[in-house]
Image (cartoon, rainbow, N blue to C red; front, side, top):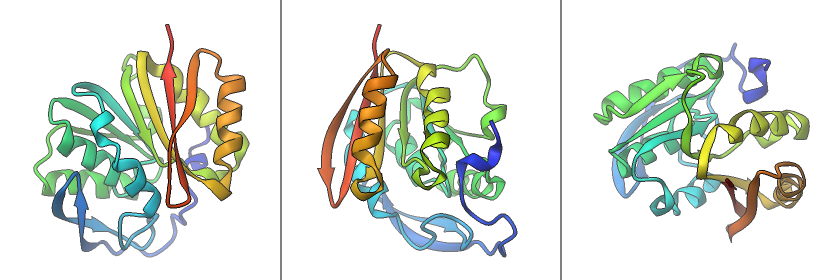
Length: 202
């Protein structure tokens, strides 16, 4: 899968990490972001909506964050679920560097950072949490989901946050029509975003 499918950031943009204060899993923390990242000045609204459901995350096992950016989802999961191993993937190596540094700053030893191609093939996931890169287009997004959803264990849940006007309903219909080994539904709607739940069936 071509790596550029995962993000729209300009890899040639100037890279100047900066520190910001954010709240993750109820904890006020200082993290590094950069102007070349998605939402560099705060936790974006969609991610906030997704993270309001953190109580649904598995207590342990492997959890995947697809397109981690500077790491808000992976870091929040790592704080909330210290017994789980959080795999943060992105094709933007600057994003991986920031997530790695942020995990170190917060003393989180349960975060694993990897390029998608480098994530061990024998790893399966108890859950997937993602604010997916909708703007890459439907074809690429579907390819991403078809790559990672089948790597969930039976009974595992994926939670995807998608803005309503960026095609959340059509994505849900595609999941229901195409990913027939999964049960897909709308978990909630908040602040113009929908959280979709995708469960791996037996």
